[in-house]
Length: 90
Image (cartoon, rainbow, N blue to C red; front, top):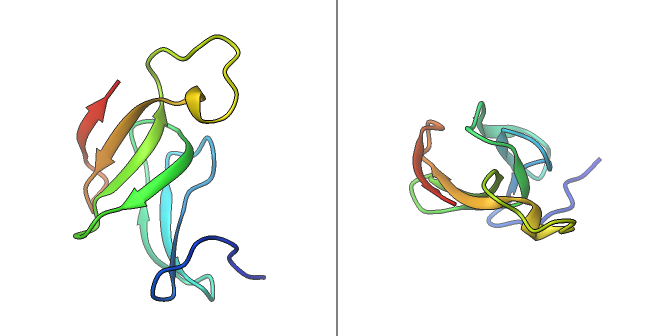
């Protein structure tokens, strides 16, 4: 089994849709770091900044009626390396 996601220096940042966790793994599926118990479930997008802060689309706020895909989230959040919410934009 392999990781089919964008890789950077042999690592992949991965988060399942509707999950309150994100994982930094190597391409052999070894977990390097886990952000768990995040304040909201995610859509599809999670991005890591230098220092280990993650920026992610999160469910909440108001979404357009019947909106498929990306608009289902409604807000953007930042969590520090320890998983603490440091920024929440609706």
